[in-house]
Image (tube, rainbow, N blue to C red; front, side):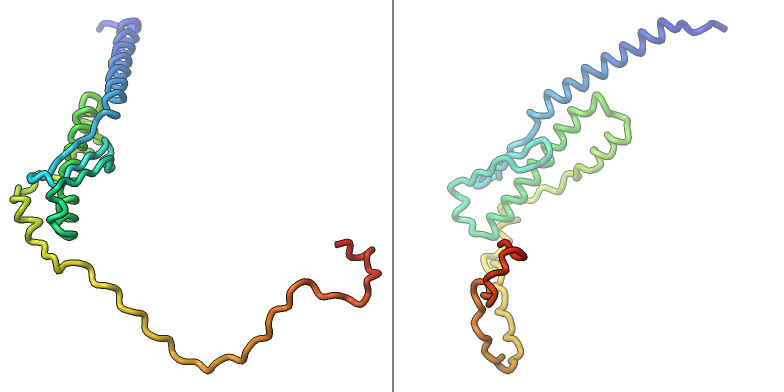
Length: 173
């Protein structure tokens, strides 16, 4: 049985720490640049998201005005979801050298939705009808009628005057 060399153990430990530090610095540098820009198939919508999936830019092409509100909304949301998924996949790739095989990596990987069956985008947002505009809220019901209250006297303005103006010692204001 050979005794473990403490110097060798420290050198290996320091090498692992240096490797982790380098991987961490690479992740930090590249994370800020991660993100995704996705355009709809017809070019009506272009969405840019950051590494956290937050919307950074939304551009509407000339065709967007032809779509109408409900169709445009559906197309924006669909395009944003695609961009968010791409950004999440980029972040996962950046995290891979540090976290592959860990529970944290698996949790992030599991949070990325699976690829959906790619339907034709035009079919999806053309199925939304123009009549899908939200209905206006109904007018509030009239309150139950109550008897009219007696008129109130007008409020008294200023402070009331006292008959005793010599009270300066007790009320300096």
